[in-house]
Image (tube, rainbow, N blue to C red; front, side, top):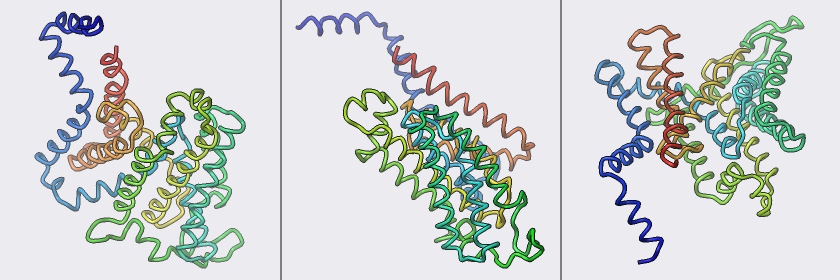
Length: 348
């Protein structure tokens, strides 16, 4: 027996059986605890409220969280490179205004509006990349600045007012266009009974998972987030990959804006404002799933589903809307405990 083997044998023998059981139990809680919390909440609402079990309610729950989930995927990508995109809500709101401006004011078809919104999201991502990669501004500060710039620009774009079909414009004329029926189907339409926005959410989740977990580019993003200097010394173009993460995040946020625009059917100037906190929350919650302690796509998707379960369940039970913020905040704190406090104890 080698010295190393004998040392390990002595160490294992020195650990009491009860301590070993406690360690295994803690590891199980870290790895599966948040999934169990999600299942437990789902069962609680399903057993206590009959309407919660209806398929229409479940689909509406997924439809409701689809925007926050898609924005959360973008945040997850930027977290993978060690950053954080705080502009996703503003970019989604910009997408709503651009869609309305394109169809209602400029009387264009839905396809043109979709392309315009995606282009706006990509430009917002490029602006973030410029500030972070070229000008070396810290990620959170840069994207906060972008958030305020976009919010102000959005108001300038629409003269500070929401855009609705038939509205009177600043020159006294009437807006000639409207939201097309095809565009409104993005959120209001279904395929085989499943809302199109839910299908978009599912497809983007799978695509983001394949990109991050199954491609060389995704592994490089994680490597940069873990140690950017080591990645640079290994010959990786750190700046280019960080820029890529923020551009993709901007495009994903604009997809969320398309869904929001289709959902509300007008260019609401306040659209997207509340989406930032939910997007960041679901991305942070996702880090605790399966005890990974790092951004991951399936964790973000589960976090979005959990937020939807809580919101729908509490609404059905008739609790005031402000209690939802308290519960969601408590869930986020619990997720952070799983991700950081307990996981550090496991590795200590």
